[in-house]
Image (cartoon, rainbow, N blue to C red; front, side):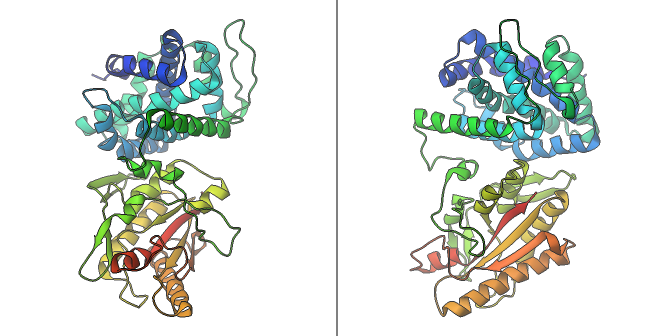
Length: 427
C-alpha cells in the first residue's frame, strides 16, 4: 500500500513551519498556512510531472541520495524541532531550481496572489517547505530500498491522493506546457499578472539570497557553525584565479580544506567528515565523504548555475589528489578521486571544467609556474584517459599565486597551498 506523503507532512511539520514563516516573513498565521499548503501540493504535483519520465525519476533519486538519506534526515528528525533553517533553506533553493525549474517565478506569483502573502514571503516559504516534502519521500526510498520504478510509483500515487487538495488554477499552471505558460490570475480583487515562464527566476534567486541574509542576521548565525559547506557561496576570497580572464573575486569552495593535518609524506589531509554515498543522475553511486570535492561539486552542478561571473568565482579544491615531491607525477592513491570526477562528468554530459595547478612559494617563481602548469595538465590528461572529451576540460598553472594559506611559513601552510583546484566553466 502506497504512503500518502501530504498528511505525514502536515502532522509532523506544518505547525512548526507556520510559526517559523510568521517569524520570518511577518505574515498572518492563516495566510502563512495557506502558502505552506499550496507550496506542498505544488511540489508534490511537480514531482509527479518530473517522475513521468525515466530520466526525471533518476534525477529525483539522485537528489534524494545526495541530500535526504543522511544529512537532511538528521536535520528534519530533530525531536525538539529546533531546526537548522540555514541549511534547510540552502537545500530548498537547490530543490526549487531542480523541481520547479523555469516555473518557479510564476508559482511564486500564484501563491502570493492566492494565499495573500507578499511575493518575497512566497519565495522564502517555498525554499523553507520543499525539503520537508522531499526528505520524507527520501525516507520512504531508503527504508524500503526502492528502485527507480518503485520511486516513480510512489510519487505518481501522490497525484491521486492530492487531487482534491490541488487548486484548479495551480494544477493548470504546473501542467501547462513551458512554451505557453502564463500565470493564472488570483481571486477576484487581486491584480492580473501575465508573467511569462522563467521571467522572474533570477529574481527568485535574489529574493532567496536576501531572505537568507536577513534570517542569518536576525538569528545571529556564526560563520563557524556546522554546515559551512552549504554556506560556502557567501564566503569571499580577495584573490583571483584566472589571470588570463577578466578579474573576478572567487569564493572559497569549502572551508574544511583548511582543517586537517599532514601525513607522513608531507601532504595535507583535509577533514572530510564521514563516508557518504553520492548518487548520480545515471544511477551510479560514488563512495566519497561528506565534505569531499565530489559532493561539493555535484551540489553546485545541481543548482544549474549558468552565470559566467559566478562560475568564474567558484573553485573547488581537490582533497585527495597528490603528486610526488617536486614532480608532476601523481601518487597511485590519487587516481581514485580522478575516477570519481570522470564519473561525475559522464553523469552530467553538459558540464565543462577547468583545472588549476598551484605550488607553495618556496623556490624559483618560474620553476613553480612551470611545475603548477605541468601538474594541472597531468590531471587533465588523466580525465581524458578516462574517456572525457578534451573540449570539456581545460588546465592552467598559477604557480604560487592565490594561496589558501597566505603566510606560507610552516609545513602545514605550504602543504595546503600545493594543490589542484577545479571549477565549472559551463553547463
